[in-house]
Image 1 (cartoon, rainbow, N blue to C red):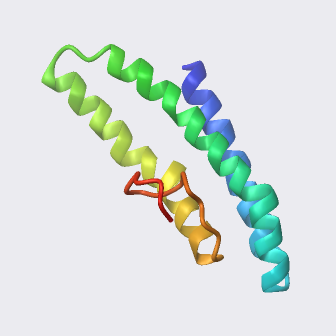
Image 2: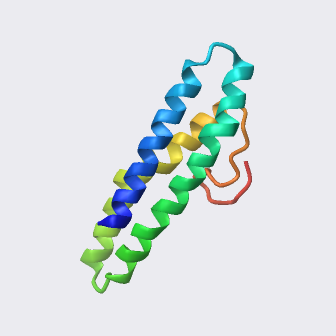
Length: 106
């Protein structure tokens, strides 16, 4: 539960950072704030999401439990990882670790 709470807190900080980025008036200011504020928090979210995955996967012993992990991923990963990465990409940043395909290339 602590790991999930840490991921949730990091996601909240990410959402607040993106709101600040979107509130900036000029594209240059948005890009600068996104690079300096939102991108580092995006990386924190990725690190925070890894812990619940480790704990969830360590408990899997049946196909039903694996389904629970898949359900968690399908409901949480888009909001925690994919959408922030897409928003940063729209700002013309190259978030090397916030990509859905996991290739590490932006």
